[in-house]
Amino acid sequence: MLDVKEAVKVATEYIQGLYAPQPLPELRLEEVEKSADDKFWEVTLSFVVREPTAYLSLGDAARTREYKLLRVDEEGQVQSMKIRRV
Image (cartoon, rainbow, N blue to C red):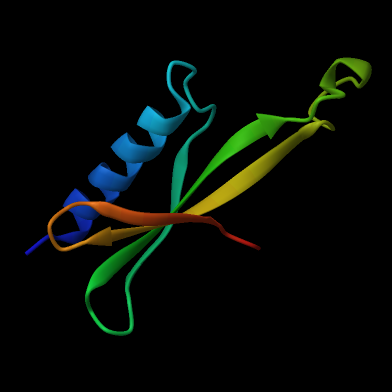
């Protein structure tokens, strides 16, 4: 049985692998919970993205945080990744 720490590790490694070779800036854990049917860990991770027009602005105005919800099964496999609306 997969515990919460292992589920977060799996989700983090998975998302970093998808976006490789570029590291995800300011990657952080937001939420973790078991699904209603207890079959999955639902892990929400976020990272900073720069808007395409970032070079036109000064400071952090063109930076936004993107949220992803990953579902990790009991075998430690990511089954889905969705955009998490906040």
